[in-house]
Amino acid sequence: MGTQSRYQRERSQLELALEMIAFEARTRTIRCCTGLSDDRIRKLYTVYFKHDERGVSVRRQRGKSPRRVDVFFQSSSKQMEATTLALLMVHYGVFAAGVDGRLRLALPRNSVGFGRRLCRVYALFRTLYPEHSLSFEQAWSLCLALDRGDELALARCLDCDGQFVHDLLSAERSICSCCRLRDCAPKVPEVVPTLDSARESRAL
Image (cartoon, rainbow, N blue to C red):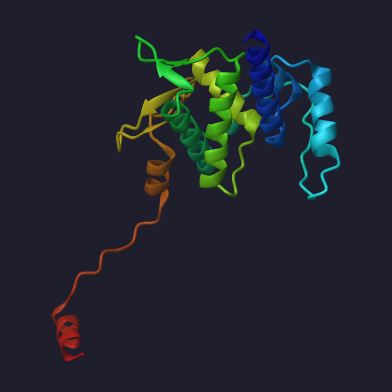
């Protein structure tokens, strides 16, 4: 029984590592979720991805994971992507609401279960945004920032009451990117029908 349990655990670790490598996650991020050694992760990349005969290009990201949150507010489209990711994380159990209303990780981030849920969210996100700009590592960074709750949070838009990723350090009003785009759109003058136009319409 113990041998089977170890086999299943190792298989889960390897399957998650391969999925995260395909999403171009950093070795450090993969190690955190799977518990595999850096050497084991590098070997998985070499065996399964480095010389892929299908022509699938998977890059190995080096260095530390991105931590800056301003990337999520560089444009309205990026804020929309970040909001979609955050809401998917809530829906698929990456987060659970704490007693204070803040988002908390539902599982420890150094667990296979957490990694699986985050990968599921990112896979669905890529389906919704084929031309997405946010990487898996940025989704990881967004997740951790929302968990810390000192820079980012899910807030309610003052205009539409929809939820969106809000910069807690910003002095701007709590307005979502969709409403901002609407407010910036050029106003289309209202066409008031006249008597002549009504007659022409009837004649047609």
